[in-house]
Image (cartoon, chains in turn brown, blue):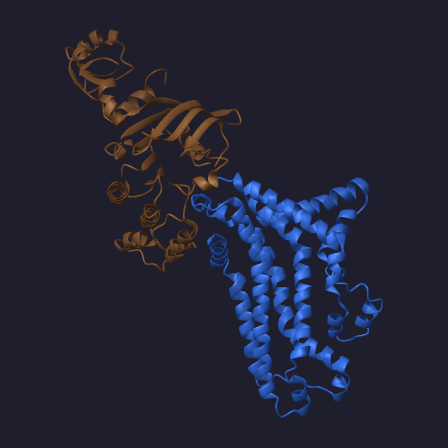
Length: 285
Length: 292
């Protein structure tokens, strides 16, 4: 499969703060990758480097280009929505369509208008007259009508109510995603995206804590729920994180087979949200 | 590519004052020409010789044009200080950067708006205003023979007047280009209070020079770059100031100025070189702005 993003020893410092510490990761075409980490872990720094907004150390190739030096041509193939990339309040809806149509050769105006017809957004409205949810709908309508190979979403649903958030991801899956396209999404609301991701990258204090396809997680990680006594017996198998729930202990193992563990209690593949918490809190947190 | 025309339209969407204010003023001039109490008295002596006639004719028609161009000296600096500051203030910079438009295109489009699109657009607007207001006055004063003679359409004299105003306008814009580029650089760089940051460095430089050396070369230099009479060739006329003081028609200025001599002035070219440097810096600065 073709690689859309390849990062090798990617680093970035802000003064004495090491925001990204020589990280390696790949993103292949046709995947939906979640870049997940707590606030300040380096998610946004990684995205900014990928989008060519900041200079970086190490090697980073996005769609075969150096994002920093070849940013202008890269932006024809890459789209992004960032929670900080707000649309200007003075802009009218039809002006937004006119503008993107003129500068982005891959923009399909009729498609964007089709999306907007399904909403309550009027083409003469200014952004300042729209609700936050409507602004996101407008932004999404613009982005979905661009035939981009890579879509980068940075906390795209921040501040939206549940209804809009669901709608956002549904639209994304139904109207945008196909095997040619790649989506990279960051969020700290893991539960919201876990059902749509094909790959996850956990990032913790500037380092990659986990990077794998979701389908491989079952083979790598096991979650064991056991009684306190059973948990004591299972501990020599070196769980990387454990927590207590209603008098029972939940232990997380990496690289252990289910057969090995099922004698101690109930086993299952951890959800991405559980795995995230385990990875962030465990292993020398 | 359609990018540059669209970037220019974008500026006019955001900064509507750039075209709304000149349009309103043009409307007011035309309306004022219709008012019954507008009066015009002309002595036969005023248009006794062709020179006097041409001078008065020029004064009349530049009265329709020059106020609008003076207004630009308020509108354009305001625009330039705001143009790159606004997108960071409203946090829309990443939205614009998410589209395939380079920083160079963005910065150049803003400079083009300030130095070409708006000034020339307003100049063309003043030509229409002038023709419309003159036509209205000609109809209203058709009973007064002297006024009628004066208001008679004279293509040659009109082209002479407007041509000279246009030449002066172009020279002034080129002369002010480095100041425009400086304001834009501040606009792209200042984190807050862009207006203050635009004024502060020259003031501080003047103050430091005064305290450290007791001189005021920088103030003189700044005064020189802000003054337009020299670059328009008005200082060549020895009796110019005296004639003005004697109450001669301002119309004489139109005849006396020699804007084309500016192109032989090295300072104009040095200013343009400085403009290029400042624009390059502004592009670099915007390249590194990724959020507010």
